[in-house]
Amino acid sequence: MRWALVKVCLAVTAMVVIAFAVPLGLVIREMASDRAFSDAERQAGAIAPTLSITTDREELTRAVLSTEPGDRGHLAVHVPAPGTAADGTEGEALDIGTRRATPKDVATVQKDGRASIAEVTGGFALLQPTALSTGEIAVVEVFVPEGEVSNGVATAWLMLAGVGVALIVGSVAVADRLGVRMVQPAQRLAGAAQDLGEGRLGTRVPEEGPTELRSAAVAFNSMADQVVQLLANERELAADLSHRLRTPLTVLRLNAASLGEGPAAEQTRAAVQQLEHEVDTIIRTAREQRPQTQGGQPEAGCDASEVIRERMGFWSALAEDEGREVRLAGVDRTVRIPVGRPELAAALDALLGNVFRHTSEGTAFAVDVHHSGDAVIVLVSDAGPGIDDPKSALARGASGRAGARGSTGLGLDIVRRVAESTGGDLRIGRSVLGGTEVRIWIGLHGNRPERGRRGHGRRVGRRIGWRGRKEARTTTGPGAQP
Image 1 (cartoon, rainbow, N blue to C red):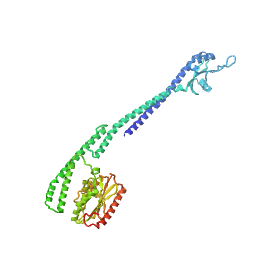
Image 2: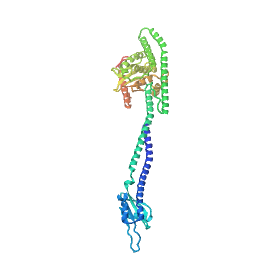
Image 3: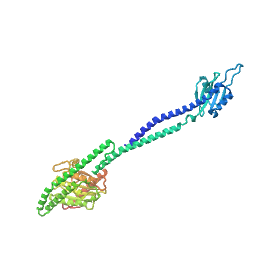
Image 4: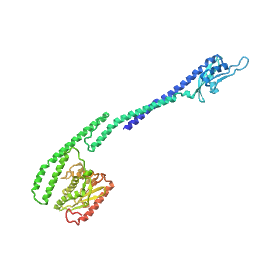
């Protein structure tokens, strides 16, 4: 906008300068020419009294040389020959001074009796007719050099050019200042919008600049205040709703304490304890004044293999109770990812919980981990009926709308946000076990996977699945590792 305003002002000012300076320069040139020829007419008129008195060559010569243009050789007198005398002799024509005009031009002036200007070498010749006492017409020739005709014109043109350049420079400077006054508030507004989008909720815009931009700044600040208020209300609501879970959790913890000893009792008590921990975390996070950023921080990373082995240890015990065959592959080495331990555990629990919730007892499932150099791929597969419409399932998870009975649509959304926080993504397809395969692509450098790499990830995952299925034939029980 700033440069556009400068260009428009430059074009308009240049047109105005040209429209006024060029005609004014032409007028100055005409004035200089008129002044030069007026001086020449005055000089020609100075010799007219002498011509009216005498036509003697010597007298005329002295009169011509006594004038300034005659002394410089710029004045000439052309006297025509007088008529035939009484004795039958003819008079002689007189040409006094330096002659530059052609005889034809002189004869034309003598015949017409009107002054004329003839172009000659080095300038112009003013031919002024003068009546003699004999009734003849003499012609006084005054030479006007080219320099006198254009005297002062170049200086005037230079002055006009300087004034025009000064006007253009001044208008551009004024337009630039106006552009800055308009652009800077717009840039501040755009920067504040970007900061607000990145989570800096304290960003506000100074209410400065033109009226329209001040109105936009007022509207932006009002919107930011409303966003902060809405987020505060949502945090309080989330904290209140989470706090309501404390009472039923207390009852569950007391009942779990009375279950006695045994694996099932220990698992129940561990689950209740973990649930209490998660509720406390939700309450603390919701009541924090600053928004929380998700994943992607180097200091929030964890060992994916360790977290997956730990969670699979929990789910394998439940799978054994339901007669499910379990396979785990690719967790025999350390795999560091830029995802916090709680976030990865929550994502894995959401996927495995869906397997137990939406497949019948005895349905096998598997978890495969593959490290591709710039990303970690986690595949969760099952042998259930599969998902008929994966796109709808992902859309339901992303939007938070409830889908199937007993589902809030948040499980896949949790997994998706974990993957996207690292530049990865979430895909749903058909697994080699015959059911659903959920693929989590976790970027290690914050780069989104390219299209070719995505295809590569699916092929690698399936190869792992086929190898794992062969290894599963040699396993002896749930939770066995290759």
